[in-house]
Length: 198
Image (cartoon, rainbow, N blue to C red; front, side, top):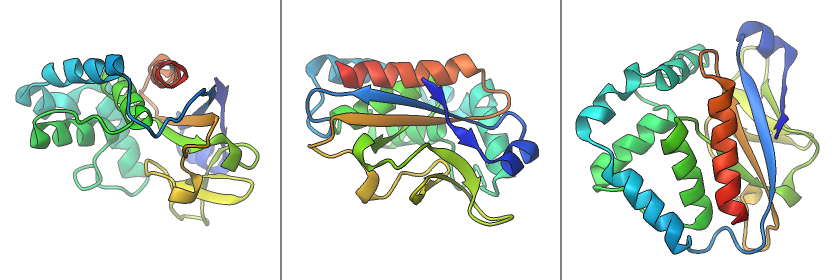
C-alpha cells in the first residue's frame, strides 16, 4: 500500500485529506462472476443490516467524518450520499446486496465492513501516480494522474479507465478524511485486494 499525492493547496485547505493506493495482481477476469464464497459473504453482510441501523449510520464516526468532508468539497451529503450511506440505502431499497461481479462485490464487502469507499482502475491505463487535486483554483476536487482527470472525488472513473477482462493489475484507491482512522482505510484496501487476488 502506498500514499497517493495530495496537491499542496488541498492539503493545506483540508487537513486530514489523504489518498491511499494499492496495486493488486489478478490471475483472472475481475469483471466476471464472483466466486461462491464471496457471494455468500455478501449475503451474510446483507442479512446483518437492519433499517434502524441504516438510519443511525450518519451519526457513526466514519460516515460522519465523510459527511463533513463532502460539505467541504461542496457536496451535499443528503443529495450525494457518502459511500456507506448510499450502499445501505440501496440494500434497504433492493432487499439485499446484489452480487454483480468479482470486482463490484469485493469493493462492496470492503465498504460495508469498514465504512470506507474503494474505487478501482485498470493498472495498464494508469499514467504515473494518482493525485487528489482541484481542477482549477476553487474547482471540484478530482483524482487524476499524469494523463489528466480520472474521476471526481468519490465518483467512479469513466469506462476507459475501468478494469476489463484483459486487466491483470488492478489499482485500488481510497480517500481518507480527517476523523477517519488510517487503519480503516488500510483495512478497506487490504480487504478488497485480498478478495480480488483470490
